[in-house]
Image (cartoon, rainbow, N blue to C red; front, top):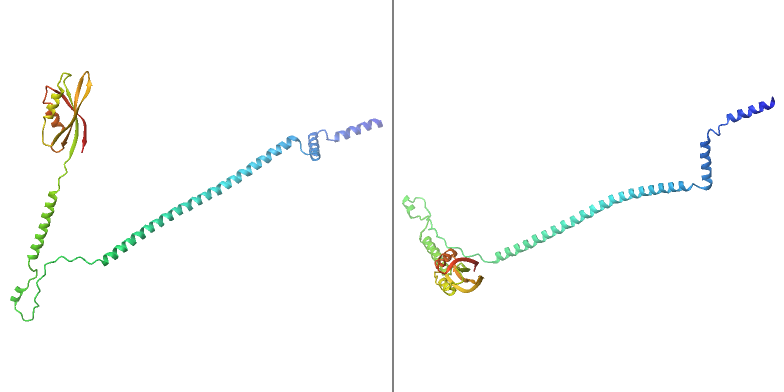
Length: 266
């Protein structure tokens, strides 16, 4: 009997203990104890290092953001100062220009003040008005000449007309500018049997006022055919290309066509 009661009391004690039911808590406590003695494990060290790197990166990002904002503010301030300096330089240039213009104006005014005034143009003098005395009759008004004589006006008109005539005569003596052009013509014959010397004589026989023939040469065209290339100088107001082509193509026995190869103003 006593032995059985002892076994029963042991079971009751075991049942009252909860160490096996809270095993996870005890394992965690044991782990913390050994970490405190031996330091954290390798995995924990890696995790802590990663967390520290993240914290440092976050801090660097915040510092760079704050630094970039201050840098942008500094750049804006520098650009504004540069713009103000440029504006100041421009204003200095404007002031210097105005000062130079003012000095020139003052010099000119001083010169004008020293220069004697030009002689006044003689004007018609009014006849002196007689002073009317008290008691004079109305007939005395006839002796008063308010406008003077017209002789001076006629003299001024005559001088003006003489100057106009002199200017017109001087202008008429100047030679008028004559517009001229240099024309290079291509005169084509009918075939290779056409007498090119006779063709050139026919072309040069065209004579008119303002036309001057120049050098010529024969230029091969093909298949033994040559064209006459001849130069001439014409006055634009008197001779035109249409008239030349019309006159040259009248020689139908020799000339097939006439073309303008070059046209230059002289």
